[in-house]
Amino acid sequence: MFGLEALDLARIQFAFTVSFHILFPAITIGLASYLAVLEGLWLKTRDDTYRDLYHFWSKIFAVNFGMGVVSGLVMSYQFGTNWSRFSDFAGAVTGPLLTYEVLTAFFLEAGFLGVMLFGWNKVGRKLHFFSTVMVAIGTLISTFWILSSNSWMQTPQGFEIVDGRVIPVDWLAVIFNPSFPYRLAHMAVAAFVATAFFVGSSAAWHLLRGRDNPAIRRMLSMAMWMALIVAPVQAVIGDFHGLNTLKHQPAKIAAIEGHWENVGNEPTPLILFGWPDMKAEKTKYAVEIPYLGSLILTHSLDKQVPALKEFPPEDRPNSTIVFWSFRVMVGLGMLMIFTGLWSVWLRKRGTLYTSRPFLYLTLWMGPSGLIAILAGWFTTEIGRQPWVVYGLMRTADASSAHSFVQMSITLALFVVVYFSLFGVGLGYMMRLVRKGPVTNEGAETSHGGPGQKRTPARPLSAADDDHDADHGTRLNKGN
Image 1 (cartoon, rainbow, N blue to C red):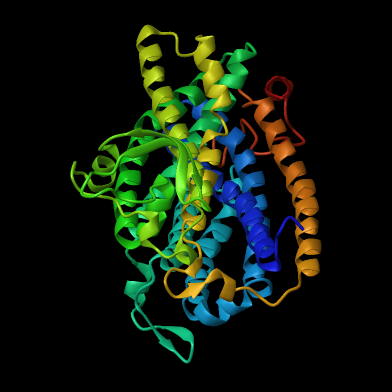
Image 2: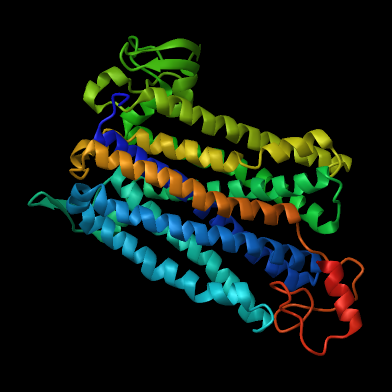
């Protein structure tokens, strides 16, 4: 069907589950750190706006965290069911790395998540803040181990091959493989960028509908400051990552650039747009800028970038896909930088919260960070092909011996279940976003917080048998 084989369906199935899964950890990483900042600022300033935002985003964090855990379990099983030959070949490296992630990050998150979500009125302020910080650190440690494992598949080192299996001989070399620092930084910052635009889009949605209060304004303000800072930083990290990829995976760079052959000693142009044709071995309708490819990728005006025709056809990634997925990522990144700069200009004019064109842009930029992450993931993973472990094991040799019918049925089931289950979860999360933060405007001032009763950490958690009429009035106003 459609010229697809069982191997193609196995790849599509894994790509489908990864695409769903990667969205949730990205938001989890960003929101966990955002919650730690919110609670820290509330403890320092006693500004109740930070507390109200903490309660609001902690509910969304909890839903997102749960969906991330569930979607991640499926991927772990797929290593054994669909990619058993890969697990047999490289399991001595990838298995321990994923185990370290469970033993450090997941246990840390699980240990403090309950206190963070349900301990607001039950533990002291410092302990609750400590729990929030530990959950945030746990998400980053999880990113560390997952990216270490994946980066090793991109740039493997620190191993020997014994009896057809990879045996680690230097764990520091395995963990800190050549591409790991760049990929770790790129992914972590991408999560912060994606969360910033998710938060900013939520604030813009409320402001466009006339819900203007200190909490909504603070959401937008913090999101735009974050975008202003981290979006340009991400561009710089991406540049370093590109130089590293050029050194270790030149075929991937050639495919990303849609660059087929060098002419004499001429510098490499940058192809802005075009259509790489794998059969014709050329990029059709190319729009080029002379010298710019060499300048960006080699930081010189005379060096050439490796071309696809320098590699055997069977070793070339699919340039048609990675050429455009990369440009989607970069294009969205440029829009993010533009949005951050525009926010500064509006801030100076005092119209950040009232400029409808800007608010509409921020609203539509809400999913941009997640789309950019998916585009970047497609670029790096499809760009690694035809290797599952770069230079060591081909993807065709890594899959399990399943039939086309078996893969078709399981793929169809995954699509139905994922859209049904996670569709409901995402719908509920969006309902929480539309509801917005519950504030206590006009309420009697109190310190609140862990160990105190003011804004409940969950519905009716502050209610008791002897609450007075004034407390009941404030609770009704908050809901």
